[in-house]
Amino acid sequence: MISAFTGTQVRAAEEPLLAAGLGDVLMQRAAHGLANAIITELRARGRRIYGARVVVLAGKGNNGGDGLYAAAFLAARGMRTTAVLTSGAGHPQALAAFERAGGRTHDLAGAAPGGLAAETARADVVIDAILGTGAKGGLRGSAAGLVKAIVEARRQAGHGFVVACDLPSGVDSDTGAAVEPVLAADLTVTFGAAKSGLLADPGADYSGRVHVVPIGIEDNFPRPSVRRLESADIAGLLPGPARRAHKYSRGVLGVVAGSATYPGAAVLACRGALAAGVGMVRYLGPPEVADLVRQSCPEVVCSTGSVAENRVQAWLVGSGLGPDDHDQLARARDAIDSGLPTVADAGALPALPDRLAPHVVLTPHAGELATLLQRLGGTEDRAAIEAATLEAARDAAARTGATVLLKGASTLVAAPSGDVYSQADGTPWLATAGSGDVLAGVIGALLAQAGPGVEHLNELAVDGDGRWAALAALGAALHGKAGRAASDANSGGPITAGVIASAIPGAWGKVSMLSNPGGPKRKSHSHPLR
Ligand SMILES: NC(=O)C1=CN([C@@H]2O[C@H](COP(=O)(O)OP(=O)(O)OC[C@H]3O[C@@H](n4cnc5c(N)ncnc54)[C@H](OP(=O)(O)O)[C@@H]3O)[C@@H](O)[C@H]2O)[C@@H](O)CC1
Ligand SMILES: [K+]
Image 1 (tube, rainbow, N blue to C red):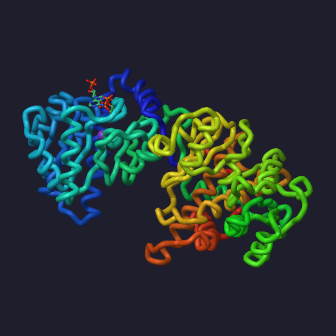
Image 2 (cartoon, protein in one colour):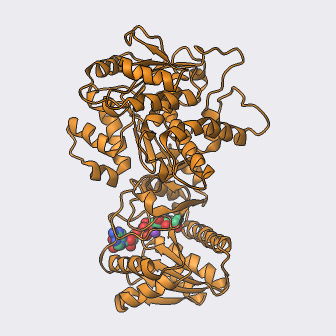
Image 3 (cartoon, rainbow, N blue to C red):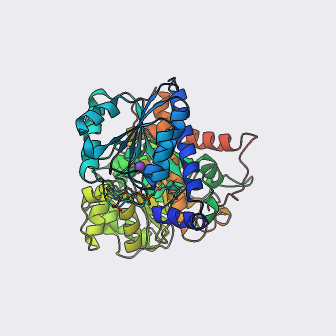
């Protein structure tokens, strides 16, 4: 599990140590971790350490202090280090250490930014240590001008790599909102814990890989702001059938999806569900779509009864429905009103009641979320949501009372309780028609396996209403891993939605096996999500 915290939470965790006079110790630990990560990265790239050129862009706060101390360590290893003081001053002790180690210093105020930008673009390593958790808003003044020039110079001639110190300057540590210009990092070395803004778009666009350096404040953290399931967590949450399981005890998912215009959505949703461990899928919909479902997925039982007449543990509604599909939308509303866990996707989103419960999982993309929030009095458009995904997902969960999964490169799942998961297991190739239908099917299947009367519910070690968010995150992780595996199987080539569904069982098996290599998966779900 990756646990991420806001800048405020991290600063509060640092506070007792700062009060005890350990500020410089914390900074040295952070700087050591940063320098080591840079050396590891250079080695991984087959580059020489001795003589490598390092430019540190250092602000006047503690973030700049981390960068300067790190550059001092690197200078002691024989690297050629240059500091650009972006605010005309540096953290006094760190700057003194840097100069003692033989580093060269430029003051941005007295230099031509074009020359500094060109020198920075030629460096083997660029350390972005301008702004950290103490900053609000983006880069200002000459620092902004310099970073803009560096971004341009690197586009034309850059060959080294960029390491963000704690977070890329200009990215909000709490929300992931970014104010241009931001120097996109290949690697972010972050201290104490990941910052929540690194796990949410657009912050994640600029962060590259995230490496956490422990600095001794880890026992002081509260409940995380954002969590990310890793393979061991995923394996611990995936349901496994009991020895005497039968199809009903494993959970039945009812699917209300597909229309004359989009019949394929029903097929893909059913295929996603069937691939994700559910005991049975019941389909409800127009006869011509039911025929297609039967032909494509003979495992699915098509029903002509009403929602109330079909016994299921969970529902999936909305994939492939339009505003004129009145019968299907009426079924979707009945399913949402049933009190059973329900995934509400695509066409069901405009038909939702205003107030929902956490066991209803909404699966919008940014455009659909904008429409949903506007109906509830919000003013955000798609672009505004894409610019602040974490706030938008949280806001939507709070306003609707539902669990909200916002699809994206970092898929966010927000529970109305405030819990948020961020999963980034996939590949951009997942952005393909029908991919969302498969995802909805996968999550529906997982909800059905945690539905009433199914043993798995009681064993899931996620507290209260947060369990629905955890299950939705599990679905997003599985879907992402399946897409990635399918693409990898074709040397990184494109994938289709059907291929994603076909790859789900393999992704499931692989993650289970890697986390439990000794044998078949135990039917134990004692992995606490803390
Ligand atoms: N506490 C500790 O001991 C430890 C802290 N650690 C490290 O400290 C970092 C936090 O340091 P911090 O609190 O000093 O803030 P920081 O992010 O450097 O920025 C503040 C400076 O930037 C300026 N500034 C602000 N906004 C700006 C803008 N938009 N554009 C331009 N300038 C702007 C602002 O100037 P002002 O606005 O006040 O004039 C001020 O000088 C944290 O991320 C981690 O790296 C670790 O070493 C562990 C130990
Ligand atoms: K930084």
